Every structure is written in structure tokens, then in C-alpha cells.
Image 1 (cartoon, rainbow, N blue to C red):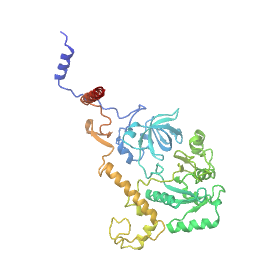
Image 2: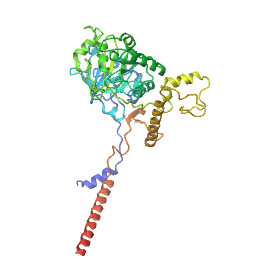
Image 3: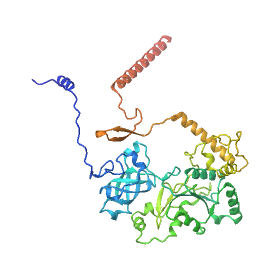
Image 4: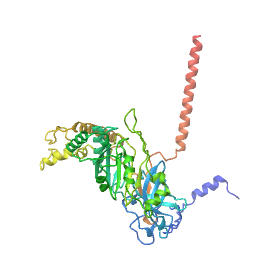
Length: 458
């Protein structure tokens, strides 16, 4: 006699639940859509756990399957990134130096791991014919710049112009504080020296020397003053930052035109393959009405140069965020304060948490030019830290959690936001329906009594 559906369901529920042990996947993963890099048979210093890979260097080429490669993120626009291949599996070495158009794996977005221009990445699901792939992993970073977002930077060039637009001390101070907070070596450069006289150049040189800086002055239009800057940037990844209209793209184009690229150089092939991404940068004019730039450059890109190294062209912005500067570290970004503290060694401020507001026992005086800018930024950072404390609290969980899987192997998975990815329970749905029905009944009752009152008045 066949069992009724309800009877069959009850019988199935009464049976004990069996836990099936699925066989482990093979160590070698030839499939092009492998989600994570698979380790070879021998022990490897590069574990398969995705979150740990951010603290590890790239693997050697012999450990890569044919569908994977490692490279450098050279450009980012919308949801696509250009990756320059620097290592591929044995037999695919001829692809070294070519570029791949990639998207970012969804898991990296879930755990909020940003892929920045300048990152060393692992590319999977590579289609060598169409030069496409998917970024699956991000390796260790030597350094990171927040504004603009670039990783593995060797040097910063803070570029301003002497005229059209003229330098503003407050904006210049913010850029210098942002550069100081990164801990990356930087150089201050002033462009458009042909638009001012020698007296103006001497004025800014002496003024910035009192701030603690020794700037360079050059003219992109007249191709002068490049020698000292070219020596600093040779063989390094350099990011050029500054407001709009100061000539960042023009400076990069001038520096790249001064170098003779031979046909045997891998850069020559890269420029021929994709001149839109790595060719000459578009240059705009300064607005005649406001005297400021027009935001011609809209995305960050690393431009290869002969002899190794990259120049990063970045969008112009007038207000760096200073997100990585705290009220305790702000003083270290001003050379004037560092000089006063060094002059009073070994006796420093009386309190270790002194923020140099004229407290009792503070050795930092307020008789220097940029002290008002210091106070203004300190108030801004205090407000931001207060808001962050109210919003996030003092403790914030990480974006990744670990669980123990088969054979005691720890597996990493993203920590999802609470109640964001959960299905709403049927009880809550039914209760919400009942609440809506009650609200409708109340509205009907109110309308009925209102109509009854209006009718009685008539």
C-alpha cells in the first residue's frame, strides 16, 4: 500500500540523519574557474586561505596552473581593471608583459578587500586569446595611499603651480600633511615657472624653507628643470598628486617623451596593444572664469616608463580626506613641530598625549605661520573621531571569519552583515500581514466615524 505524502514525510523525519563524508577535491585544479589558488602536492608557503594571502608574496611561476597568472594592476575604470602580467605558468612565458582586462571576484567585495591600482594580484580563469581574466587574490602591500587610492608606491610627487591656478597655503598644507602621513618619501614640485618672475620663485622658496621643505621649480611648457626630478623617479613607482589644473598629466607626458623606448622593450609592445590605457594622457585647459582646472583625468592609471618603473596619473582634487591622520599623529606631519620637539630634547612636553594647544608644560609655541592651519585640522579630526566613535564604537569585528571544515582544515568565509543576507521568517511575514490588516481596519473605522459625524451635523 503506498504511503500518503504526509505519512511519507513523517516517516522520513523519524529516520536518523546521516552525515555523508564527501571525498576531498584533488590537489591539482586544472579547471579555469578555480575559486582559489590550489597548492601543489608538496607543502607550499602560500596557503589556500584567501585572507592570509594579503600578507604573503606572489608564488613562483612553477606553482601556477595554465589558467592563472600574477601581475600588477595598472589601471582601474568602472568595474574593470588592467593587469600587466609579470609571471605565468611554464610554457606561457611569452605572455609576460602583456595586459589582461579583468573583473574582481565577488568574494573580495564581500569581505571588503579593495583591489587598488598598484596591487600585485593573482588572476584566474585567464583567457589568453581574448586577454581576459578575474582577479582572485591580492598579495602583500608595501605601502598604500588613500588619496588617491594607490598601493605599493615608492615615491610621491606633490605638484602645484605658481600661477593659473595660484597656490593656496591652506590647500598646500593639506596635501603636505596627507603626504607626510603616508610615510612614503615625497618631493614638492612647482610647475609653470615661466608664468612668474624670479622674485616670486624666490618668495615661495624662502617661505617653504621656513615650513621645512625644499621644493623644485620647473616648467613643462618650456621643458626645463626636469633633470633633478628624473633622477629621483628612476626605476620607481611614483604617484603624482595635486589640485586640478596644475599640470599633472602634462608633466607625466613630458617625462615619458624624454625617454627613448626601443622596439625590444616590453613597454613598446604594451603601448601598441593598448594605447588608450597606457598611451599619452589627455590634457585639458584651465577655466577662464574660475582660474582652476576642469578635472580632465577621471581615473587612476600606472603608466610604464623605459628602464622600469611607473608614473601614476591621478584625478585632481582640492581637499585630501586625511582619513589616516589622528589627533595624536597630526603633529608629526608638521616639520615645524618636529623641529621644536627635537630642539627641546631630552625634555619634551609634560604630558604624553599633548596635542600642542598651549597646555601646561607644552614646548610647542604658536608663533609659526601654519599654526592656525594645524588648529583647524585638529578640530576637524576631533569631530570625525567623535562621529566614528558614536557610529562604530571602540570594538569592530573583522570582515572575515574562520570555520573548521573537513579534516580540521580552517576555511575562511566573509562575515556577512547582520540581518542583511537572511531570509525573513514566515512568522514575521504573517505578523506583518496582520499588522497591515489591523491598520487598514483602523483606517476604515476612522473613515466611518468621520462620515457619521459629518452626516449627523447635516
